[in-house]
Length: 382
Image (cartoon, rainbow, N blue to C red; front, side, top):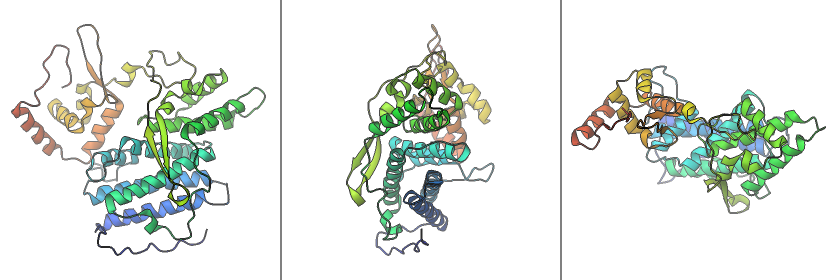
C-alpha cells in the first residue's frame, strides 16, 4: 500500500473546535483506522486479520478517548496517572452526553475487542464473512461517532483511492454464524485431525457473544465445552443461545453499505447450579457465584463508607441494572448481591468522578425524602 495522503484540512463553518489533546487522539484514531482498512483490502493474507483487528480496536480506543477529552470527561486514573482502559472508555462514553454509545454500539466494540484479544494473546480463526461484517459495522460506527461528536464525516479523512471494504454484499448475520458452526462441526468429524483449527474458530464465535454480554471473556474451559457439545451434535442455537439475540441491519450498496448490529428476540439463557450440567457449553451461570458481593463488601474494598458507596451506586444506576445486581429469596430473607462487573464499574468511576460532589448531591436527595434508605426486613442494599 502506498504512503497515505495527509489528512485533509476541513474548512467548514460547522467544524468543531477541539482541544489539542482531543485533536491528537482523533488523528491517531483515524490513522489506525486507515491502517485497518488498508490491511483488510490488502492482497496478502499473512497476518491480515490480526492487523485489521488490532488497529480497528486501537482506532476506537483513541476515538472514544478523543470524544471524552473533548467533552472534558477525565480519562486518567487519579491514583496511577495512566489513561483508562478500553472497557472503561466504553462505559464512560455510554454515560456522556453528546456521545451516548448505545448498548448495540458498545456490543460491536466489545466484540471487536474480544476477537482482537485472542488474536493478540493466543490465536483464533476469523471467517472472512464474519471479519467483513464486523469491519463494515466498525466503519459505520466510526462514521456515526465522528458525525455525532465532531460533526465530521469519515470520507473527509480517507484518500479518494480507497475502495469499498468489499465488492461482495454482506451476508445475513445468522447465515454467517450457522455457516461457521457447520464448518467447525465438519472439522471435528472423526479422522479430520483439525481440532486446533476448530477450536480457533470456536474462540471467534465465543468472542462474538460480547454483542449480547458485556462481561464476555473467552476461556479455554468454554472452548472445551463448546467443542464437546458440537461433537455431540447439539444445535447451534443450543450451544450459542446468546448469538440468537444478535442481528445485523444492513442497508445501502457498494460505497454506501452500512452495517449496524442490533439486538433481537432470541432464546433465553438458562441458569443452572452445576456448570458441567450441559456439555453444549452454554455459558450457564451459578447466580450465587456471579452475584457474590454484598454492598458492605464492595464499600469496604473501595475504601468508602457504606452511605457513600450507596450514593455512588445510585449515581451509576447499578441497583437498577439486572446485569449488575440480583435479589435472592431465601425464605423471609431477600439479600441483594452484586457482580464483579458492578464492583469494576464503581472502581473505574472513582478514578474519574468527584466523589464529594456525588455525595453532596445524594445527601440533598436524601433530605428531600426521595432517596430514603431501605428499612424492610431482609433488605441489604446499603
